[in-house]
Image 1 (cartoon, rainbow, N blue to C red):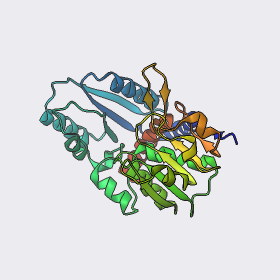
Image 2: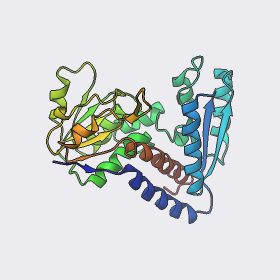
Image 3: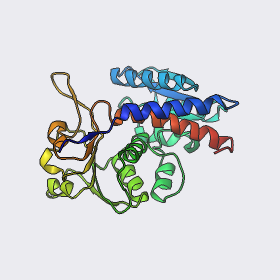
Image 4: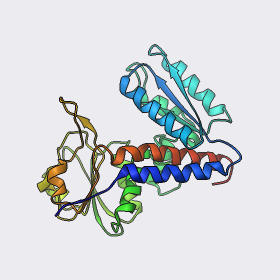
Length: 282
């Protein structure tokens, strides 16, 4: 068996084109502000990519870049000003933050209605309760990929490998909302390969390069690899051993070009959703 490749880059391009068309019909430009603290090189790349993508679909996008020495109080004051700005529909605080600033404090300071990362505890609670709210971008992107895969979600056995607040837990909630039977597996799970082999849908989000081997995968399973890891030789790989998995799975996402592009596309979706909701047009 050779797995069908689930091309996240192509799916994301279609989503962005649709967002651009919708934005062109609006009487306003959705406003996105990305707050970056410090000079982390990877954060700089991510922020530039987000800003470029937002402007390409017609959003009013800007980066608020604060120095590494910014205090937590000053960051919270910056967020409060963005919360109060009627031109701003979406706020994203780029992680990681410098060690002297509490990540949870920054996340909690964002107005939940402008929390386009979907990380605020109120939005996490809404997701857990099955209520509408802003959903974390990467899990939302995975659901788009699964829809494109043609997999039947209702009743399917889904395993989410990873339990982070950013991906694993919200991913499980979304799959549960789609009527999957969901297992969350992690580093302390007994016989992890056996748990993964039970999955018709396997979402790997552990941050360990090529941890999931081909013999962990059930024949014909849909495998979504959220991981992105850089090897010493500079090569990017996922959490799944792609060549091995491709020989067993029915469909699989590549790394790069799978989930990564979907995360930014869904940030843009969240921003438009927030903009419409704030104006009573959602």
